[in-house]
Image (cartoon, rainbow, N blue to C red; front, side, top):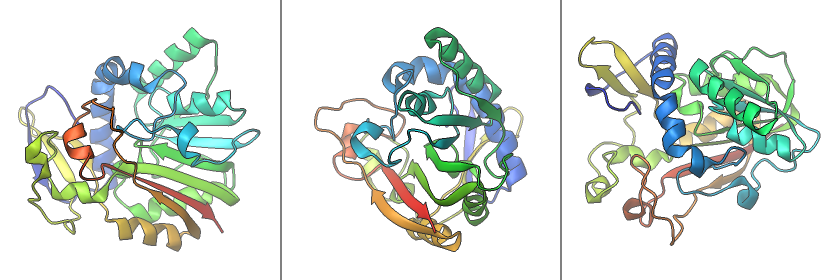
Amino acid sequence: MSAHRPVRVERRRVDETASLRANRADWDRYADEYQSTHGEFLGDDGFLWGPEGVREDAIGALGPVAGKAVLELGCGAGQCSRWVLRHGGRPVGLDVSMRQLQHSRRIDEHLGTRVPTVLAGAAVLPFADATFDVVFSAFGALQFISDADALVAEIARVTRPGGRLAFSVTHPTRWMFPDDPGPEGLVASQSYWDRRPYVEIDDETGETAYVEHHRTLGDWVRALAAAGYRLVDLVEPEWPEDHDRVWGGWSRTRGLLTPGTALYVADLG
């Protein structure tokens, strides 16, 4: 979420055009700080599924990627895509933020790697039908799109039959609680079934500055089924006993008691 800017928070409907405009500007502003703060934890070619620090090497949600065409939605600086490259896959990264993709190019130049990237939103994917074997997103895109059913159908369109979709988002039950890493974040104060997006409004300009959309666990399952996916797994990573990192509303205080991440794994057809 947006940092170091006076904002007020609302819960209200926001369409895809306004969501894209706000989040693109927000990530362009925040990219440098994000990479500086979290880059070492993420790793230049690492693959984290969420703030708990659980890695793809341990989960295996993507399955074997060697020789496969792999699309990352909301790739940021391409850390996860670079992991795919290192394991023999053919990754393409997509992100709405030019500044994030510039960081991806910076890391590529440093490592001598090359991850092709595309500047675009995930709601309308600029690829032909049945282009990819695997599509994934690690907290990268799906929670920023207004229409979940249309989004998953669009992902299915660019995926080959039998292909895999894996994505992590804020665990839907977290929407009942304040986004606070301390004890205050353990007290339920809002309805789990309130699907209105979380919206930040810039106090100075009055413009929508950030939008995140909420779906229940069942909403995501139904969206996957409607698009022809078969749910393979729903992973709720436990907080490691020795993990003390605070990242936004994620913390040891909350993580030992309630899940912070939901990772969906599904196959098409």
